Every structure is written in C-alpha cells, then in structure tokens.
Length: 393
Image (cartoon, rainbow, N blue to C red; front, side, top):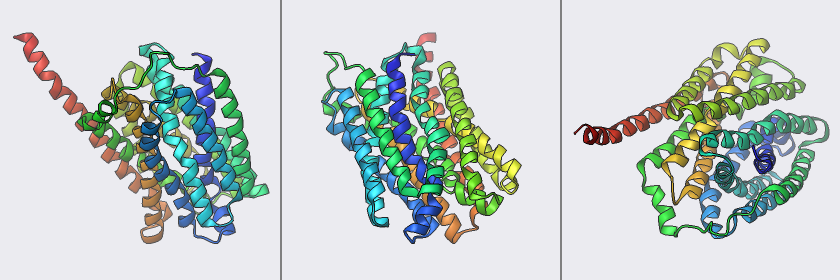
C-alpha cells in the first residue's frame, strides 16, 4: 500500500477521534454544563447531522478544487472547530462548535475514499477503503480511551485541546505525502454528477447504510452509562473497555475489506446479519462484566466489518460521474445512522424501557438495513435476467 494511503489514514484518525471521543465524556459534559445524559448524547446527533448537511454541499462547492487542496482545507476546519469546542462556555456553544467541526467530516471521507481507490489496483479497492477507515478504528482504539482518560483527570476541555493538536499533525502529514491530482483530472459537469441521485441502486445503498449502521449507535452512544449503570463497572474501567472495543473495530474493518474484495454482496449481507445478531444478544450479556466485555469486542468486529462493503457498494453503483458526490453522501448516510441511533437510544432511555433494552431496538434497525440489502440484491438479479435471455437466444 502506498504511503499516501497511510497519510489519508492519519487524517481519518483525527476526524474519527473528534466524532467518537464525546461518547467517553458524556457524564463529565452533562455534569459540567448542567444537562441530562440524553441532552449530552445529542452532541453526537448534532455532529452527525452536520456531517449529513456538510457532505453534499461541500463536495459540490469544492468540485473544481484539486482534491489535495480540499483535504487540507477540511483538516483546517476540523482543527479550528475543536479549538472552539475546548473554549465553549455553555452547552449551546459546544453544540455549535461540534456542528462546525462536523462540516469537514463527510467530504473528507468521501473525497478521501475516491483518492484511496485511485492509489491501488481495481482488485484492492475495498482494502484501500478499509485501510483509510483504519484511521477511524485507531481513533476508537487509541483516541477515545485517551480522550476519556484526559477528561476524567483533567476535564473534558483538555480532550478537545488534544484533538486539535492531532489535527495539526494530520494536516502536516497530508500536505507532505498525498499526491496532487493529474492535470487531466477535471470535474464532470454538475448535471452529470447530480444525475447519480436518480439511480435507484445508489439511493438504496444510501438507505441501507443509514439503517444498517444506526443500530450500532443506539448502543455505542450510551456505552459509558451502559457499562457503569447496567454492567456495574467503575468509570475508570470504561477507558480500558473502549480500548478493547477499538481493537474489535480494527479487526472488523480489515476483515470487511478483505471479504468485500472477494465477493461484495455476500460480504454485505453477512456482516449486516452478524451485527444484528450481536446487538440482539446484548440484553442477555450486558449485566456481568466478563460477558459485557465479550459483547463489546464482538460489537466492534461486527459493526466495522460493514463499513467497506457499504461504501464500496455505493461507489460501484455510482461508477463514472458523481462518484465524489455519492461517496460523500454515503459518509453522510453513516452519520445519519449515527444521529438516528443516538436519538432512538435517547427515546428508549427517557420514555421507554431504559438502558438495558437498547440492544433489541438496535437489532431491529439493523435488520431493516439487511432487508434493504436483500432487496438490492434482488434488483441486481432482475437486471441480469434480460442479458442472460439475450445471450441464450
């Protein structure tokens, strides 16, 4: 794999850290800013909605700018946004700063995915995407536990200062190692790029990303209170458990890329099925520390094994003009799933059966995503039937 791909991974690490680190700080933020845990959880939903809005708008707005320049500008927005989070005086300012930071997220991963697939042979595209997304898994493996530890010992603001520093380092690495685009790498007409939104399989792919991935965030958004209030572990134990979760993400991410390179649709269906099964088992295993840790590891593996198949599915169905836009929209779809999951989890906690019931609600959402994937496969088979009939004739 080229070193430029590792530079993209470094950028993904920075952005992934700021997205997920708040999950290890919910109790500190809610106490310091005098809001409920569910309200603190909305900081995750706000970020995700910012990604969903920013991804298509910034992708279209920057379509004539070289991709390397776009990536560097987005990393600068990310760094300044985290500084604003560290300086936020109240909940409203923190929410606004999170939304500003999130604007860089979708376009970075969308454009970065296209750059990554262009750095490797066609048969390694899913693996290239999974390696770039290893930055996200490393963020969860290292960034989130480190952020939770900083928040516990030095306050949640120290965590955001540290993330801003990560952004400075990532900017430098991207500037040095990511190559500039080819001279003939000109954007397609805007009309041709927007036409991708009229492809039913692209829209179906985006929908399966939203609903298939939402199940993870019904649970993971509230992992800190789940572990402390239901499992009964101490706050100090949350960071090591998140570290283990990050290890599961790393394994699942690389596994999903390998499986998708071999056969995309079986990988997609298999990983979504595994995620639904793991989520559905939560209510039986979350009550004791040992089984809860096993659950957290399996959740990490199953959830991020879906990422490369879901991203590559949309890229394949958006081949040609509009790949940048479709790729960014699918990152937005991941984050809409994030926002939907965080919101549904908050409703279950405040108005429903409570924390322990999050697992089966999460599994239902992922099963809807699986149903959409089965529908998409059926459309693939229907579209190949006329070709087969013509060949036989």
